[in-house]
Length: 220
Ligand SMILES: NC(=O)c1ccc[n+]([C@@H]2O[C@H](COP(=O)([O-])OP(=O)(O)OC[C@H]3O[C@@H](n4cnc5c(N)ncnc54)[C@H](OP(=O)(O)O)[C@@H]3O)[C@@H](O)[C@H]2O)c1
Image (cartoon, rainbow, N blue to C red; front, side, top):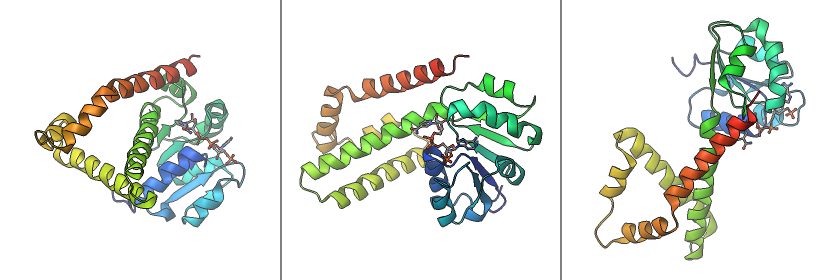
């Protein structure tokens, strides 16, 4: 589907919706005029209007005007929101829930049979871990005397370049890492410190902890 044809909605306009919306717009995945966002108050809607998106206080309007709808309210609000949306959901809609702990089974029970519905939750804590890693990388550069602004920009470009390499080559990360590891060079010295700090085990444990917490919160 062409970007101009894609119509994206957000029910809930807060932090998570804002992060995703900004990402979609920056990536040019969908024009701002094709995005509609709802929230009960104006608190978070102003920034969406500045980006050129349409805003409303009516959740049903979002469903009526979009094919892909992100459900970005707090988990405790979601059942009420789904009850409200339910009569207007069609087989053409794809609903994507960001709510922590609301299981796919629960979403399916709250929606008409056959509704296309996904959960985005398990990956989101990983995004936050990448921010944490970026912060640490930039602060390391600042520690070595680099100005703060330059350190953040270089960090972001490095992460962007690494992500592009992963996507474009389809290689395993270990292969790409091995390719840039000159014997006795800077990369292997840096890597040794990361291994001493058990970076991989720590990140794996963090993913496990976040996933288990999401499941606990979803127990119904
Ligand atoms: N924040 C995180 O780090 C994080 C990480 C992973 C997953 N999540 C999940 O993402 C979801 C959103 O979290 P968040 O941090 O973005 O929350 P948030 O910043 O509090 O945003 C919640 C949004 O929902 C809106 N809202 C409240 N009641 C509503 C209703 N009846 N109909 C439509 N919109 C309604 C709020 O409206 P107002 O603007 O009027 O207040 C606000 O715009 C949650 O389910 C959370 O579990 C969050």
